[in-house]
Amino acid sequence: MLRKTIQLLPFEYKHLENQIDAGLFRKVIIGMSDIPGYVGFSYNGEILKKFDDKKGRLCKLAGIKVLDIKTKKYLHYTIYVSTGTITGYSIIGADKYTIDVNSVDVTEFRKEYFINPDYQKIESSLTYKEKETVNPASIYELILNNKTYFHLKDLEDGDFIGMDYEKNIYEIRHDPFDISPMNCTLLDVFK
Image (cartoon, rainbow, N blue to C red; front, side, top):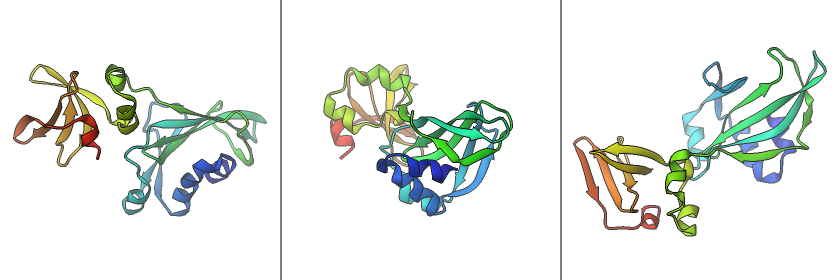
């Protein structure tokens, strides 16, 4: 059903079908989300590396419908994508269903990005070029030593590059704990 749906979407989503064909998914995970009707996946790590896009935003492919053979009603079907990779899907409208995989309706298809409230706190201070460079999904707020920082980019072992409200850039290490100012701009961080 997932493959059939992606085949009906515009060509820009072809990479999602390639993930299925490459054997990205190891197993199905049910009941591990607060999203109603959500089915997630675990991944083959080596294959995930080929498709993971650190700049890819968290979004859902919504407005899709599938026919339940039992009730003859269309159910809402949504595909979830994070960092360019399918994370799962949800079907809502019935607790138990049998889907007619040839009934996928994408006439009301739309892509919706998730809003990150932490990113919204700094968005207005960013230039157009900075907004194009930063991945809103990777931004989150931390308070360290009574000062607010925003995570920008992971380094290794839990260390990261962060920014304050004044757009000063810092290397933040956890072991030993250290916050070191960096002499660079936000754009320099992502070069």
